[in-house]
Image (cartoon, rainbow, N blue to C red; front, top):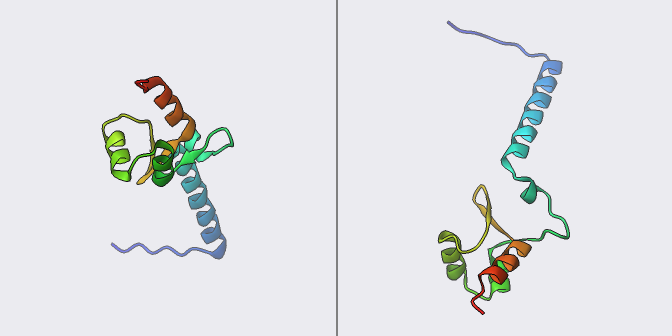
Length: 96
């Protein structure tokens, strides 16, 4: 059984808008509020920046992250570190 649909130009535009709104809605659900908005108070660092702040190598940072020794946020495959969370974690867990 073959079904054939014909869409008018107006229907195609409406369908495009519906898809666009659905994608926006799903993206909002996937991204935590703390990551989707970066304010001056909340600075997010990539891996290289976090290494520079902590004074460690990428391998050491990866091991800290893997073993749950430092807080991080993951969005898809991207790993981000909140600067204030890292500094607070260091203050609490410092052995000095």
